[in-house]
Length: 266
Image (cartoon, rainbow, N blue to C red; front, side):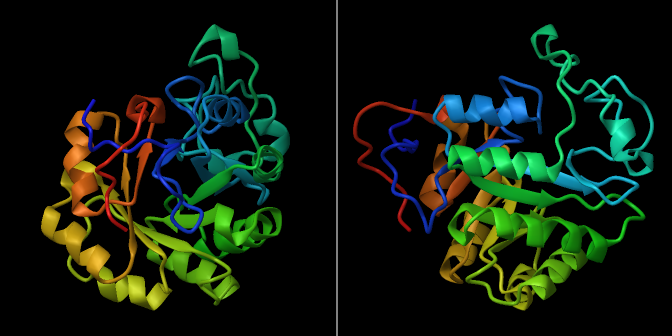
C-alpha cells in the first residue's frame, strides 16, 4: 500500500469528518444501506457511513438507494409505491448472502437511533427519484437527522440542487447544517452553486476528478469528498491533490499500520 494512503486512526478529523467513510455502511461485508451494514462498519472501526434516504408512498423516510426494489430485495416494483407495512415484508439481506436473510428495510428513525447509539457520524444522501418532491424529501428527513445527531456528526448531501436548496431552507445556518453538493463530474459553475447553498463540501467521482478542479475546490475553502474509492494505490494521488475524505465500499483496504508522514494538507 502506498505510503501516501491515509490511516483512519492516524489522521485527525476535519471538523468531525474523517478521511474514510463507509459507502452505504460497510457494503463490502453486509447488504448495503441496512442496519447490519452499519453495525459491520462500526465493528470494523469505521467511524462514519454514507447512506441513502428516500420516501415511501406514505411519506416514511427509509434507507434505500434505488428507485426500484429488484436489485437489493426479494421484491419488485417501485419504492415510491410502497407503504411502510408493505416494505416491512421485504427481505433486503438474502440477495447479498444467506447469512443476512430476513434483514428488513430500515426506516430513517431506526437508522439514526443505531448510529447515535454507536457514536458514529453520518453522510446522509437525499436521493430524489424521478417525479418525487424535493421539498417533501428535505422536510421529512433533515429535521429528524438534525434532532438525532449533533452537527459535527452529520453531513447532508445530494445530487439534486432543488433538494439541497430545500434542506438549506429548513436550516439556514451552515454551522448547524453542513451540506454537500454531489456530482458525477464536478462541472464549471460548481462554485456558484456551492456558494448559493452555503455548502460545506463538494463531492465527486474520483475517477473523473482532475488535479486542477480539486485544487480549485480546496482554494475556495470547501471540503472535497470523493466516491467510490476501492483501489488505494490508484487513489493515492488524489490525497496529494487535497482530497479530504474518500467514501469506500471497504475502507479497511486503506488502513495502514505505523506513522503516515505524508498526510494530505488541510
